[in-house]
Image 1 (spheres, rainbow, N blue to C red):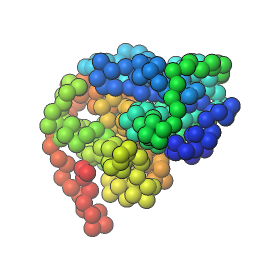
Image 2 (image 1 turned 45 degrees about the vertical axis):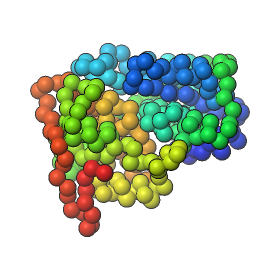
Image 3 (image 1 turned 120 degrees about the vertical axis):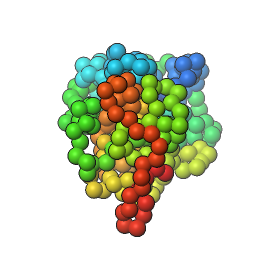
Image 4 (image 1 turned 30 degrees about the vertical axis):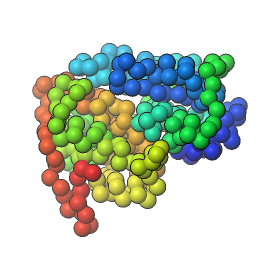
Length: 294
């Protein structure tokens, strides 16, 4: 199974006994609940996993030292994935309603813990609905599985890794450009970005739509080459370690790789001892092109 699957592929394989479809809809707006959206209608057979409770460790929150979505322990990953019926032989397809911005968190989390047979549904439930495909409110019966989680080296980094990174290794910020620049900061303690970071909004991985889907691998390769990812695998961050995984999926689709700074800006900005920059990063010349924010 490829890392990105189409709605047509999912429709053909929806009832395969080794396939687990996972709804990971989640919203920054606390008035909106992914679990409620799932209950109102989801792709048949899909289970629900919550970004806050299931795909993040304890102790997170706005303005807290660990950031908003701390990386979960292997023990938590084992428990959650096993409870969702995901084991070593399970193919997993994750979807959301934000063009993979949230679903990529599950894709990266599973790969980081040794489970490569996972994909994101391109276009998500928005494309599924637009094509007239079925939804259900039925709760599937799921047999628990055993999921042996072991974090792979290099997939997830911390503040110390970012502070000590080689200057030749790119640092990419997946947030919207206005948050990178520090024009405003509606969520986290400080505005701006980590010094030396380049702006790489996750929306730049997508077509215009509607609905938006991932750009072709060759276009993604050029995008990330212009951001320095061919010279060295970048460290990628966002607000809280969720949409950065969208950039990491795009890098993977482009034949490149990177690492996640899991605490991201919500952790960094909560530590007053750490520096921050605002404004645009000065563009660099590379092969006749300009590197910098898109």
